[in-house]
Image (cartoon, rainbow, N blue to C red; front, top):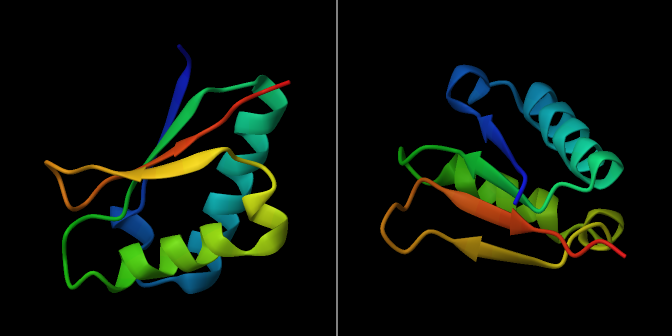
Length: 85
């Protein structure tokens, strides 16, 4: 099972960089037929996690992946799962 990881700690306060990083990793996952992306917004206030989840809910992004799982043991992690044809 192939997996990509995106840690957003370094760019947490730069909205445009966050969206670009998310777009880039989503496209890479589709292009390389990656099964899972692990996104780490960190724990913090939860604002970054909300930003990531809003990004993933956009219609054109939602078409790219199969489902989202929130890590039940670690609040600061989101898994995006893909089902490639």
